[in-house]
Image (cartoon, rainbow, N blue to C red):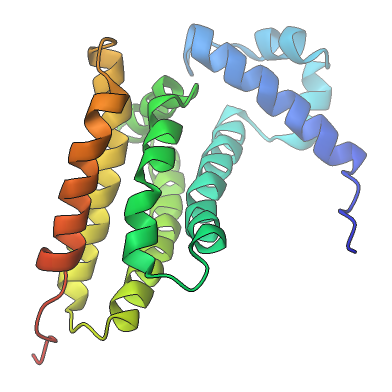
Length: 211
């Protein structure tokens, strides 16, 4: 039996700052949040906060990394539930969980604000793109595994397109919920499953790229 490693005091303090920063950014926005507000919300001095994070951009980077970890855990979750079954069947079965995670994400609006900030701030843009690259590679590896399990031919171009469309579908849920709070997730799930299954089984498999 393995035991988890205890969380260090430094990690506890970093998490304390991140929790406070997330609450402040939600309430006041990235630019509207001052370090004095972060200090009050976290119960730590400004100097102490700077001990763990160089600036607000470094805090944003940590928030993005936490969101990335959620994405990287999706294939692990699907693998735990599928046993020896078909990967694509398991992926489609997991749509409800993945959609709920996106739909009810309390940080959805905050993450959209970070993406908007990336359009103005090159450093934030770089942080977002690094996380995006890692996330897409994780999804591509899992889809490639599913294709190989079925002995399907495919091109890397079609695989890349499928990953981006999958991401767009789930990320779009968070945007639609902000624009349309009456949107029903339960009504959306069956159609999402059909769309994703069709893409995985009819659009993604293709003759191997010989160019």
